[in-house]
Image (cartoon, rainbow, N blue to C red; front, top):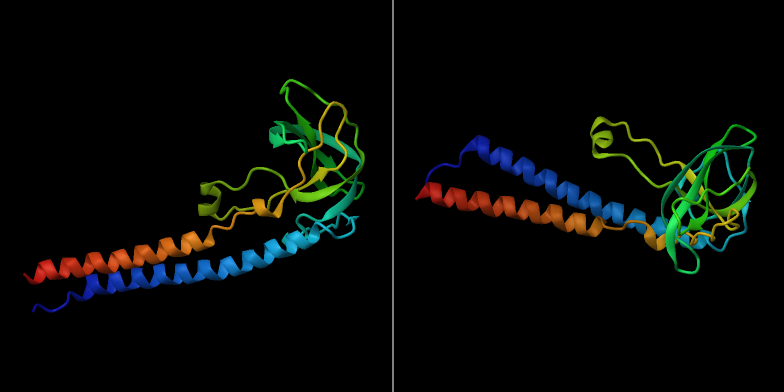
Length: 202
């Protein structure tokens, strides 16, 4: 039997070790995500609190209050009302009295041409995150910024239906699938390399 090629074997072993490490890391992340979801579910039943200056993930889905001192731009996106109907949710960019910036989901309308009039003021609702997120290029370049906080208002703006309250079940929990995927990649790499060695020995 021929000697094992040192460099290719070392490369394969390092690659397999890296993939197994990624699989284990995804399992750890799964446990962390499960704890976050459980905490988020508990937040749904807690009394409302003022929107804090520093917002962390453990505050997601909590009931909060805030004051929109100045309304900025408006954006629209797909949404669902409390009655189950779908449409376009209207999101306003707000600035608080202390300069804090956040967004407010003020409700859903079936007509994308509808423009609600809302001049700001007191807001009460559920803390969530504004739609959108970092792109693949942002992740590759390390320019990932945390999502903007968004309050899904309990009271809709004139002409809108109240948006469906955010649900912790919407938090992505695909870490187990990623762990299995990385482990399968590692196993496939080992099998392919062993087949290559067997062919080489012949």
